Length: 327
Image (cartoon, rainbow, N blue to C red; front, side):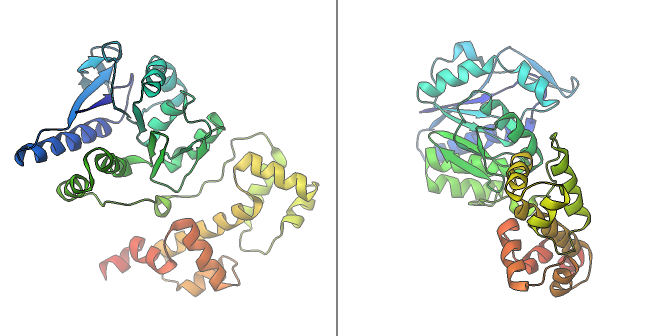
Protein backbone atom coordinates (compact mmCIF):
# COMPACT_ATOMS: atom_id res chain seq x y z
CA UNK A 1 0.00 0.00 0.00
CA UNK A 2 1.25 3.47 -0.93
CA UNK A 3 1.20 6.06 1.83
CA UNK A 4 0.14 9.53 0.65
CA UNK A 5 0.74 12.56 2.85
CA UNK A 6 -1.26 15.68 1.98
CA UNK A 7 0.27 18.66 3.75
CA UNK A 8 -1.88 21.02 5.76
CA UNK A 9 0.24 24.19 5.69
CA UNK A 10 0.19 26.90 8.33
CA UNK A 11 -1.83 29.95 7.40
CA UNK A 12 -4.12 30.06 4.40
CA UNK A 13 -3.84 27.51 1.64
CA UNK A 14 -5.91 26.08 -1.18
CA UNK A 15 -8.69 24.05 0.43
CA UNK A 16 -9.65 22.74 -3.01
CA UNK A 17 -6.15 21.31 -3.45
CA UNK A 18 -6.41 19.40 -0.18
CA UNK A 19 -9.98 18.21 -0.66
CA UNK A 20 -9.56 17.44 -4.37
CA UNK A 21 -6.48 15.28 -3.82
CA UNK A 22 -8.06 13.44 -0.91
CA UNK A 23 -11.25 12.79 -2.85
CA UNK A 24 -9.60 11.52 -6.03
CA UNK A 25 -7.15 9.18 -4.31
CA UNK A 26 -9.96 7.95 -2.02
CA UNK A 27 -12.18 7.30 -5.03
CA UNK A 28 -9.46 5.16 -6.61
CA UNK A 29 -9.58 3.02 -3.46
CA UNK A 30 -13.38 2.80 -3.84
CA UNK A 31 -13.08 1.75 -7.49
CA UNK A 32 -10.74 -1.06 -6.49
CA UNK A 33 -12.87 -2.15 -3.54
CA UNK A 34 -15.96 -2.43 -5.76
CA UNK A 35 -13.98 -4.76 -8.02
CA UNK A 36 -13.08 -6.97 -5.09
CA UNK A 37 -9.50 -5.69 -5.04
CA UNK A 38 -7.55 -4.25 -2.15
CA UNK A 39 -7.21 -0.45 -1.82
CA UNK A 40 -3.73 0.76 -2.70
CA UNK A 41 -3.60 4.16 -1.01
CA UNK A 42 -3.38 5.11 2.63
CA UNK A 43 -4.16 8.84 2.66
CA UNK A 44 -3.41 11.15 5.57
CA UNK A 45 -3.51 14.87 6.15
CA UNK A 46 -0.20 15.86 7.71
CA UNK A 47 0.47 19.06 9.64
CA UNK A 48 2.74 20.56 12.26
CA UNK A 49 -0.07 21.15 14.74
CA UNK A 50 -3.43 19.54 15.51
CA UNK A 51 -5.61 22.28 14.07
CA UNK A 52 -5.19 24.93 11.43
CA UNK A 53 -7.77 27.70 11.15
CA UNK A 54 -7.78 29.57 7.86
CA UNK A 55 -9.75 32.02 5.74
CA UNK A 56 -10.08 34.30 8.80
CA UNK A 57 -11.34 31.44 10.93
CA UNK A 58 -14.06 30.42 8.49
CA UNK A 59 -12.58 26.92 8.09
CA UNK A 60 -10.65 24.57 10.34
CA UNK A 61 -8.59 21.58 9.23
CA UNK A 62 -7.54 18.87 11.65
CA UNK A 63 -4.60 16.86 10.30
CA UNK A 64 -4.70 13.10 10.86
CA UNK A 65 -1.08 13.11 12.02
CA UNK A 66 1.81 15.46 12.67
CA UNK A 67 5.04 15.40 10.68
CA UNK A 68 6.81 14.10 13.80
CA UNK A 69 4.54 11.05 13.68
CA UNK A 70 5.26 10.16 10.04
CA UNK A 71 8.51 8.27 9.77
CA UNK A 72 8.02 6.99 6.21
CA UNK A 73 5.74 8.01 3.36
CA UNK A 74 5.66 7.41 -0.39
CA UNK A 75 4.19 10.61 -1.78
CA UNK A 76 3.85 14.09 -0.29
CA UNK A 77 1.39 16.55 -1.82
CA UNK A 78 2.09 20.24 -1.19
CA UNK A 79 -1.01 22.40 -1.78
CA UNK A 80 -0.88 26.03 -2.83
CA UNK A 81 0.04 28.30 0.07
CA UNK A 82 -1.66 31.69 0.06
CA UNK A 83 -1.26 35.19 1.41
CA UNK A 84 1.87 37.32 1.32
CA UNK A 85 4.41 34.79 0.05
CA UNK A 86 7.28 35.92 2.29
CA UNK A 87 5.12 35.42 5.38
CA UNK A 88 3.61 32.16 4.09
CA UNK A 89 7.06 30.66 3.53
CA UNK A 90 8.30 31.84 6.92
CA UNK A 91 5.44 30.23 8.85
CA UNK A 92 5.90 26.94 6.96
CA UNK A 93 9.67 26.54 7.27
CA UNK A 94 9.17 23.79 9.86
CA UNK A 95 8.05 21.54 7.01
CA UNK A 96 11.30 21.98 5.08
CA UNK A 97 13.64 19.59 6.97
CA UNK A 98 10.88 16.97 7.05
CA UNK A 99 10.34 17.25 3.30
CA UNK A 100 14.07 16.94 2.64
CA UNK A 101 14.42 13.95 4.97
CA UNK A 102 11.43 12.16 3.43
CA UNK A 103 12.74 12.76 -0.10
CA UNK A 104 16.12 11.31 0.86
CA UNK A 105 14.27 8.26 2.19
CA UNK A 106 12.60 7.75 -1.18
CA UNK A 107 9.36 9.74 -0.95
CA UNK A 108 8.13 11.52 -4.07
CA UNK A 109 7.24 15.21 -3.68
CA UNK A 110 4.51 17.00 -5.63
CA UNK A 111 3.63 20.70 -5.48
CA UNK A 112 0.29 22.03 -6.67
CA UNK A 113 0.10 25.53 -8.15
CA UNK A 114 2.07 27.96 -5.94
CA UNK A 115 2.86 25.20 -3.48
CA UNK A 116 5.96 25.26 -5.72
CA UNK A 117 7.33 28.10 -3.57
CA UNK A 118 7.43 25.88 -0.48
CA UNK A 119 8.90 23.00 -2.48
CA UNK A 120 11.55 25.27 -3.99
CA UNK A 121 12.51 26.60 -0.55
CA UNK A 122 13.84 23.11 0.28
CA UNK A 123 16.59 23.52 -2.34
CA UNK A 124 15.56 20.19 -3.87
CA UNK A 125 14.35 21.91 -7.04
CA UNK A 126 17.67 23.61 -7.80
CA UNK A 127 18.69 22.68 -11.34
CA UNK A 128 15.35 20.96 -11.98
CA UNK A 129 12.25 21.92 -13.93
CA UNK A 130 9.26 23.31 -12.10
CA UNK A 131 5.79 24.56 -13.07
CA UNK A 132 3.67 27.05 -11.16
CA UNK A 133 0.82 29.47 -11.76
CA UNK A 134 1.79 31.78 -14.60
CA UNK A 135 0.70 34.79 -12.51
CA UNK A 136 3.45 34.01 -10.02
CA UNK A 137 6.21 33.28 -12.54
CA UNK A 138 8.14 36.53 -12.14
CA UNK A 139 8.06 36.34 -8.34
CA UNK A 140 9.15 32.70 -8.44
CA UNK A 141 12.11 33.41 -10.74
CA UNK A 142 13.34 36.23 -8.53
CA UNK A 143 13.13 34.10 -5.38
CA UNK A 144 14.51 30.87 -6.86
CA UNK A 145 16.88 31.70 -9.75
CA UNK A 146 18.49 28.24 -9.61
CA UNK A 147 15.22 26.52 -10.52
CA UNK A 148 14.36 25.97 -14.19
CA UNK A 149 10.85 27.43 -14.28
CA UNK A 150 8.77 26.25 -17.25
CA UNK A 151 5.79 28.58 -17.41
CA UNK A 152 4.02 26.87 -20.30
CA UNK A 153 3.81 23.39 -18.79
CA UNK A 154 1.10 21.98 -16.55
CA UNK A 155 3.16 19.03 -15.27
CA UNK A 156 6.84 18.47 -14.56
CA UNK A 157 8.33 15.14 -13.50
CA UNK A 158 12.01 14.94 -12.60
CA UNK A 159 13.78 12.60 -10.20
CA UNK A 160 10.74 11.91 -8.06
CA UNK A 161 9.73 15.57 -7.85
CA UNK A 162 6.53 16.71 -9.52
CA UNK A 163 4.92 20.11 -9.97
CA UNK A 164 1.81 21.49 -11.61
CA UNK A 165 0.56 24.64 -13.26
CA UNK A 166 -1.88 26.98 -11.60
CA UNK A 167 -5.29 26.69 -9.98
CA UNK A 168 -7.49 23.79 -11.08
CA UNK A 169 -4.92 22.52 -13.59
CA UNK A 170 -3.40 20.93 -10.48
CA UNK A 171 -5.99 18.20 -10.93
CA UNK A 172 -4.14 17.13 -14.07
CA UNK A 173 -1.09 16.39 -11.93
CA UNK A 174 -3.27 14.41 -9.52
CA UNK A 175 -4.48 12.26 -12.44
CA UNK A 176 -0.87 11.89 -13.58
CA UNK A 177 0.09 10.65 -10.11
CA UNK A 178 -2.88 8.26 -10.07
CA UNK A 179 -1.54 6.79 -13.30
CA UNK A 180 1.99 6.58 -11.86
CA UNK A 181 0.85 4.77 -8.72
CA UNK A 182 -2.32 2.93 -9.79
CA UNK A 183 -2.10 2.57 -13.56
CA UNK A 184 -3.58 4.09 -16.69
CA UNK A 185 -6.99 2.44 -16.29
CA UNK A 186 -7.55 4.05 -12.89
CA UNK A 187 -6.41 7.43 -14.23
CA UNK A 188 -8.82 7.26 -17.17
CA UNK A 189 -11.67 6.14 -14.92
CA UNK A 190 -10.94 9.00 -12.49
CA UNK A 191 -10.85 11.51 -15.35
CA UNK A 192 -14.30 10.35 -16.48
CA UNK A 193 -15.88 10.32 -13.03
CA UNK A 194 -14.49 13.72 -12.05
CA UNK A 195 -14.78 15.10 -15.62
CA UNK A 196 -11.17 16.24 -15.81
CA UNK A 197 -9.59 16.40 -19.25
CA UNK A 198 -6.75 13.87 -19.08
CA UNK A 199 -3.31 14.36 -20.67
CA UNK A 200 -3.62 18.15 -20.84
CA UNK A 201 -0.03 19.37 -20.74
CA UNK A 202 0.04 23.11 -21.47
CA UNK A 203 -1.24 26.22 -19.72
CA UNK A 204 -0.03 28.49 -22.52
CA UNK A 205 -3.51 29.35 -23.79
CA UNK A 206 -4.45 30.68 -20.34
CA UNK A 207 -1.42 32.91 -19.85
CA UNK A 208 -1.54 36.70 -19.96
CA UNK A 209 1.86 38.24 -20.67
CA UNK A 210 2.88 40.80 -18.09
CA UNK A 211 6.48 41.85 -18.54
CA UNK A 212 8.73 41.49 -15.51
CA UNK A 213 9.48 45.02 -14.28
CA UNK A 214 10.37 44.25 -10.68
CA UNK A 215 14.03 45.05 -11.23
CA UNK A 216 16.37 48.04 -10.86
CA UNK A 217 17.78 48.29 -14.39
CA UNK A 218 16.24 51.60 -15.47
CA UNK A 219 17.38 51.58 -19.15
CA UNK A 220 15.88 48.10 -19.55
CA UNK A 221 12.66 49.19 -17.84
CA UNK A 222 12.40 52.17 -20.21
CA UNK A 223 13.06 49.86 -23.16
CA UNK A 224 10.22 47.59 -21.99
CA UNK A 225 7.86 50.56 -21.75
CA UNK A 226 8.90 51.76 -25.19
CA UNK A 227 8.25 48.33 -26.73
CA UNK A 228 4.84 48.11 -25.06
CA UNK A 229 3.80 51.59 -26.22
CA UNK A 230 5.11 51.26 -29.79
CA UNK A 231 4.73 47.55 -30.58
CA UNK A 232 2.99 48.30 -33.92
CA UNK A 233 6.14 50.05 -35.20
CA UNK A 234 9.12 48.33 -36.74
CA UNK A 235 12.07 48.32 -34.36
CA UNK A 236 15.33 46.45 -34.09
CA UNK A 237 17.51 45.46 -31.17
CA UNK A 238 20.23 47.79 -32.45
CA UNK A 239 17.82 50.74 -32.52
CA UNK A 240 16.67 50.07 -28.96
CA UNK A 241 20.23 49.66 -27.71
CA UNK A 242 21.36 52.96 -29.27
CA UNK A 243 18.20 54.69 -28.01
CA UNK A 244 19.30 53.95 -24.45
CA UNK A 245 23.03 54.50 -25.10
CA UNK A 246 24.04 50.86 -24.70
CA UNK A 247 26.06 48.49 -26.84
CA UNK A 248 23.94 45.72 -28.37
CA UNK A 249 25.60 42.82 -26.51
CA UNK A 250 25.46 44.63 -23.18
CA UNK A 251 21.84 45.65 -23.78
CA UNK A 252 20.79 42.10 -24.69
CA UNK A 253 22.59 40.64 -21.67
CA UNK A 254 21.00 43.11 -19.25
CA UNK A 255 17.55 42.75 -20.82
CA UNK A 256 17.59 38.96 -20.52
CA UNK A 257 18.83 39.11 -16.93
CA UNK A 258 16.18 41.63 -15.89
CA UNK A 259 13.13 40.26 -17.73
CA UNK A 260 13.87 36.53 -18.31
CA UNK A 261 13.18 37.19 -22.01
CA UNK A 262 15.45 38.13 -24.88
CA UNK A 263 14.62 41.45 -26.53
CA UNK A 264 13.14 39.65 -29.55
CA UNK A 265 11.05 37.36 -27.32
CA UNK A 266 9.74 40.38 -25.43
CA UNK A 267 8.73 42.13 -28.66
CA UNK A 268 6.98 38.97 -29.84
CA UNK A 269 5.12 38.43 -26.58
CA UNK A 270 3.89 42.03 -26.47
CA UNK A 271 2.61 41.75 -30.06
CA UNK A 272 0.99 38.36 -29.46
CA UNK A 273 -0.71 39.64 -26.30
CA UNK A 274 -2.18 42.50 -28.32
CA UNK A 275 -3.30 40.01 -30.97
CA UNK A 276 -4.96 37.83 -28.33
CA UNK A 277 -6.92 40.79 -27.00
CA UNK A 278 -8.13 41.62 -30.53
CA UNK A 279 -9.12 38.02 -31.21
CA UNK A 280 -11.03 37.91 -27.92
CA UNK A 281 -12.95 41.16 -28.31
CA UNK A 282 -13.08 42.42 -31.91
CA UNK A 283 -14.57 41.22 -35.18
CA UNK A 284 -11.37 41.87 -37.13
CA UNK A 285 -10.29 38.91 -39.22
CA UNK A 286 -6.91 37.33 -38.54
CA UNK A 287 -5.17 39.19 -41.38
CA UNK A 288 -6.44 42.51 -40.03
CA UNK A 289 -5.19 41.61 -36.55
CA UNK A 290 -1.79 40.71 -38.02
CA UNK A 291 -1.56 44.05 -39.83
CA UNK A 292 -2.69 46.08 -36.81
CA UNK A 293 -0.02 44.69 -34.49
CA UNK A 294 2.76 45.37 -36.97
CA UNK A 295 3.46 41.92 -38.39
CA UNK A 296 4.25 41.83 -42.11
CA UNK A 297 4.64 38.05 -42.46
CA UNK A 298 1.38 36.13 -41.74
CA UNK A 299 3.18 32.79 -41.71
CA UNK A 300 5.71 33.99 -39.13
CA UNK A 301 2.88 35.44 -37.03
CA UNK A 302 0.95 32.16 -37.03
CA UNK A 303 4.07 30.20 -36.12
CA UNK A 304 4.92 32.55 -33.25
CA UNK A 305 1.30 32.70 -32.07
CA UNK A 306 1.05 28.92 -31.84
CA UNK A 307 4.45 28.66 -30.16
CA UNK A 308 3.38 31.08 -27.42
CA UNK A 309 -0.27 30.07 -26.93
CA UNK A 310 -0.32 26.45 -28.07
CA UNK A 311 -3.23 27.31 -30.39
CA UNK A 312 -3.66 28.68 -33.89
CA UNK A 313 -5.22 32.19 -34.12
CA UNK A 314 -8.52 30.66 -35.30
CA UNK A 315 -8.51 28.10 -32.49
CA UNK A 316 -7.84 30.87 -29.99
CA UNK A 317 -10.70 32.99 -31.31
CA UNK A 318 -13.06 30.01 -31.26
CA UNK A 319 -12.10 29.34 -27.65
CA UNK A 320 -12.36 32.86 -26.23
CA UNK A 321 -14.47 35.07 -28.50
CA UNK A 322 -17.95 35.12 -27.03
CA UNK A 323 -19.91 35.65 -30.24
CA UNK A 324 -18.02 32.80 -31.90
CA UNK A 325 -18.93 30.54 -29.01
CA UNK A 326 -22.61 31.48 -29.24
CA UNK A 327 -22.60 30.90 -32.98
